[in-house]
Amino acid sequence: MNIQIITKILTDAGIEENEAKKEVKMLLEHFSNYTELDRLLGKILPENDWNRVLQKAELRAQTRLPIQYIIGESYFMGEYFKVSPSVLIPRDETELLVREAIKIIKNNNFKNVLDIGTGSGCIACTIAKQTEAVVLGVDISLDALRVALDNVTKLGINNRAVFRKSDLFEKIRVNETFDIIISNPPYIPIGTTVDLEVMKEPAIALFSDENGLKFYRKIIEKAPTYLNPEGYLMFELGYGESLEVKTLMEKSFCKITILKDLAGIDRVIYGQLN
Ligand code: GLN
Image 1: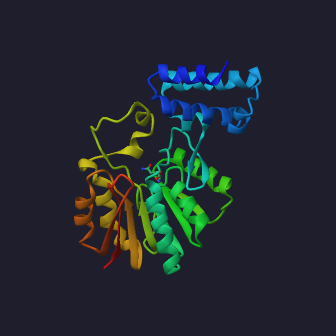
Image 2: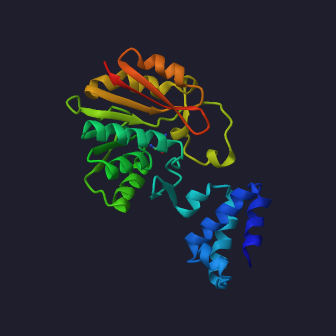
Image 3: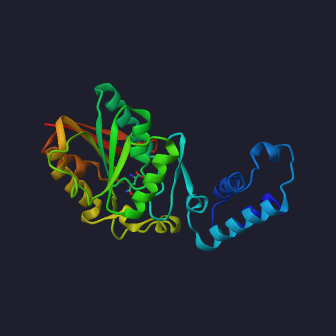
């Protein structure tokens, strides 16, 4: 058994070569103690370890489950987060949103953050870990919240990120207010064709009615009730949605700012309560 054979199992299943190589490395590091250094030193991996890696590669090839679900972890902003098919896999683009939120929180000494549609809790936990703020993460999915809670333990931030089952603001009390409301809502227009792997992620975390805008509209309508004066509302944006979301925000928010991701796509929008 060797790395080439395992890589071929993945490429034969239609996984692109560079991606397959990366995934084999991830499988080796996760399901054995074999590191890149061991490979360079020509260390031989015990047959048992190969078999475990082989099994996982076959599972990946047969099911096209994203590699992160097979490993059970995903890297985001310097930490490994637990993930399962109940949650969206954290995306690189989301780092832009979280970095900007952390800057705003630190500059303003903000203490209370609400993360709507928290999923794995990657946004809530990272903010809690890297600032002094306490973050409430809400999600409609109990299974997602279980994963988010495990991530609180994993990151050692007990009591700094807390979670509640709520359909958007449904279970937020009127006297509960926040300095920032942040969300990476489902924003892919229903009917859009997505990759095989993306189809394995929870549809409720991905797709939205109203051309992808439903959750922006709903959150923008209610956010003013739950924000402190001059509080911020921040979103990750879906492709081509910035102008429409900006228009929705302009009714109650000012100083609207849009940030582009590395691909030059409008990816983050935020504004301050009027
Ligand atoms: N907040 C989580 C993330 O950004 C989940 C978002 C979602 O499920 N739409 O990854």
